[in-house]
Image (cartoon, rainbow, N blue to C red; front, side):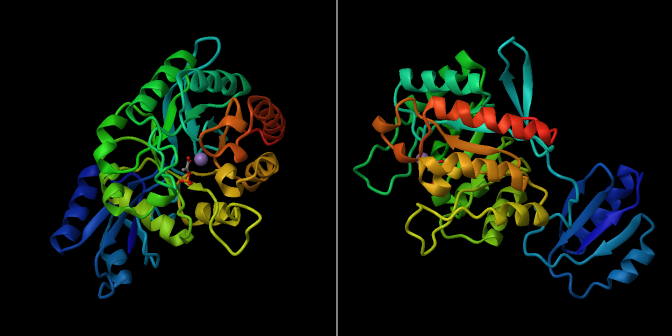
Length: 347
Ligand code: PEP
Ligand code: MN
């Protein structure tokens, strides 16, 4: 159940209202929007007479029952889009600005699947920056299907990302695989939870305690609702900075690595206030599909894009077949910039 409070109610009144419910045994989620403040009750609300509560509480404008299992991430509880700002992007002329997700913008995250060497990550970072990417991605800890495949450079990989950020002024995104690694990620700008860890609930709870943006990818075989429930795990611990990422799901189709579900973008944005980006590299697994799908991702109204780019895809230690080379990425960005400009959207 959610109570939408009247405009201009004093904080002291809100605190009193929240306390009454907590004294009655409910947990509460307080959601402060630009238009109004909402108080959502967690617990068995079935016996509550909604009409009576609205009529007898001066500060309440109206109330609604929240039928979804997820509450904090739901649009019913929080109507405004959540806007996530990543500090530290430095433009070519030395200006520092925030990268913004969720404000009608379309920032592009690009970089190799795995950080492989200093030369590789710095070369890729420089080229994607020139083409207009806003963040650099790179896996330092890699979840690989085979234990014999390249597992990532681990701590050294993170150090190389920090170095690439310093040189290029691009904030960085990297995947954490378990909670013991979290201290190493203190200086990473966005912590990625990969598809294979989408339902690692202990990890979700730990990143929920951080004050740091989290990029939560949809699991290989997880429903849209399960993705929202995983986001709820993070948000219920206090961290509201979550970016959802559609990256394709397993279906009976074998010609693509995954089936990229673009309807999920629209549904997620209807159901939740969180920004939603898409990864067409893992979503298709095929280099020639990445640019056409990226155009579709912009057109469908996603809040951003994540693309794998490698300086020499043929030699990549992971996911070379779905990676663009710097020139292909430059072409894609040129095309996206033109299309975004027609919609007055900032890339
Ligand atoms: C990745 O982004 O490098 C990755 C491993 O993606 P996913 O978790 O979506 O497979
Ligand atoms: Mn990859």
